[in-house]
Amino acid sequence: MPLSKNECTILRGMGILAILLHNYCHWLEGALMENELTFVQERSDAFYAYAFHPDGNAFLQFFSFFGHYGICVFLFLTGYGLTVKYKLQNTESIAFLPFVWRHYKKLLWLLVGGYVLYQVVIFVGTKSFSGGVLDWLSMLTMTNNFFSIDIWPKPYWYFGLTMQMYLLFYLLVYRAQSNRQIVTVLSVMTVVSLMPQFVFAPDSDVVRLLRDNFFIGMLPFTMGVTAALYGKRLSNYIKTPYLLIAGAVSGVLLFFSNVNLVLWSVAPVFVVVFSLCLVKVMPRLLSKPFQWLGGISAALFVIHPTTRAICFAKLHFVSAPHTELLIFSLFTVIAAFLYHRWWLVKFSPIKN
Image (cartoon, rainbow, N blue to C red):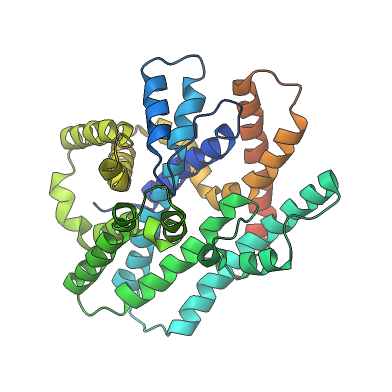
């Protein structure tokens, strides 16, 4: 399924909105906890018991439980974007170290500004910094995922995961000699990545550690690479009726994806298919806000742990959780817009 640049930006907007809402909602009192890195049947049972007897907090509980799947959208776009850029458009050979350094430097610049700001806010509030020297080094080298270090801010674990996906792309996709080799190798890797939760207890520390790394990302990443390589062949099937049917089916499957371990393991498929169908049929007027959010998605991701910390510390006077979420969302969007314009656009060492 070929995607335009605008559609990719809209997808980023959809993904980052889900992540923002999730990362605030699941901190609210009484929030239903999600199955992200591990699968806990009791959490699923609690959610579905609530879903069939909801109250006024259904919106908050939905994003608390499902919002983390926004990450799957970004992992899909990572595979798709890298393949289009380096396999389909680029004709010059790129050495391994320059490739790694370029992408590490890009991620580091994105991370540093937000991390320093977060530490300043934490110091002002608690008179101490978050973490120690080893935590800071693991964060800046993006290696904390390997050691299961309980970093703060927690959403920054995604930087290490992204760096791993860049490495896997170069080793498994960029250096491959044919599309068939790419799909075969990635398919094998994807199957391997799905095995731990069936070999070990799905809520074990082993599964958590493995899925804290590239194991969690192989399925949507592989879908992204495959979509880039073979998307044009599917163009004849991208008709509105087909998209509506596929979107509806994948949406239902996504909703019930946490019923058991098997469906949970392949839930990223439902997330990606649903998101792709939605972006293809979404009216232009409705897509505009998502496109704008997608344009500052990197800044939103980096800045929202800081604005979340501030809101949780200062919004005690707000009794309604929906109002609290609205204040957080507006505050985050304004802060991210300023961060994007000042830090990422004006001073970034890499412009594209």
